[in-house]
Image (cartoon, helix red, strand yellow):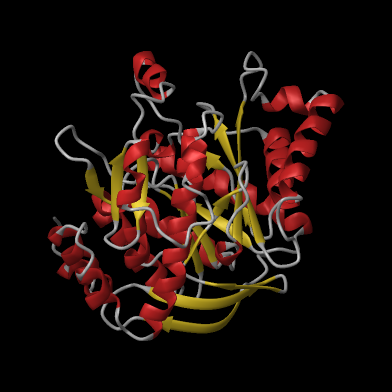
Length: 392
C-alpha cells in the first residue's frame, strides 16, 4: 500500500483549476505550483526555485542496444556500478534533506518487461526517489487501441504495484498515459491502492491540444476526491511550435498549471528531425535562442545580439555566458527557461492565494484568447456529469 502524502494546506482558485498546496513528503516540505529541475544540467540553479528534482533513464530489452539494455546492466556488476555512480552523482547535486527527488524510468520495447527487469526498474526508481514513479512505457498511447490491450497494460500496472508493495516506505506515483478512453479506469486502480501522487505524460504535446484528455483525467481525480488531495506532476510537455513568420509564440507548457497541475517537469522526448536540422543547431551564427518571457508568457526566438530585448534582471545566468564561445547554448537556454518558469511559479502562488489567476492570465499578451477561454471553462466542465459535457 502506498504511503500517503501529507497535505497541510490547500488553496484552490474559485474560477480556475489553478491551485496552491503545501504538502510534506517523508518530512520534506513542498509548496506548489512548482517547476521541477532536470538535475543532469551542468549549471548551478537559482536557490529560489529549488524543491523538486528529476532524473530520467531509458531502458530497452534489446541486448544489441548496449547503452540502454536492461539485461546488460543486470548481467554486469561493472555496468550496474556505473549506473549507480551516475545516479549518486546526480543525487549529490541536490539537498536530500529538503528537496524531493523523482527518478523516472522509461521502458522502450514492444513487450512489457518480464519480472526480473521489472523488479530492477522499480528498485532503481525506488532507490533514487522520494515518491516512487511507476515505469513509463514508450508509445503506450499508440499500443492501447482495444480493451484486450488495455487489460494487458492494467495487468502490468498491477504487477508493478505488487512488486513495490513487498517492501515499501514511500508514496507511489501513478503514471497516467494520454489514453483518454481508459483514464478513468487507471485512476480508479490507483485510488484503490491508496495512491495520491500522479504524473501525466504529455508525450511531446502541448497541454491545451489535449483538452478533452486532461478534462477526463481531472474529472476522474475529482470523482475519487483526489483533485485537491493529491500531487499532480507532468512531463514531456511541448512548449509550442514556432513558424517561419513570427519570432515569438505563446508559451503552452506553463499553461498546464491552469489545468490543475501542481508541478511541471522536463521534456525528455528527444527532438526529431533531419540530420541537416541538427547540424544547423551547432552553428552559432545561424542558431537562434528560444527564451521564455514570464512578463507576457511568450517564447522568443532571438539571436545572441538580441538578448537585451527580454533579458530579465532576476536571472542568475549572466548574459555574457551566451556570448562566450565555449558555452553550450542549448544547455544555457534550457537552464534559463527552467529558472524563469520556476520564478514565475513562485509569483503564481501569491496570485492564486489572492484569487487573481483569471485577471492575471488575461493580461499575458502572448496567451491566445481561445486558450484563455479553455482554462476558464475547465473547472466548470469537470464539475458536470459526463452526459452534459460538450466536446470540442
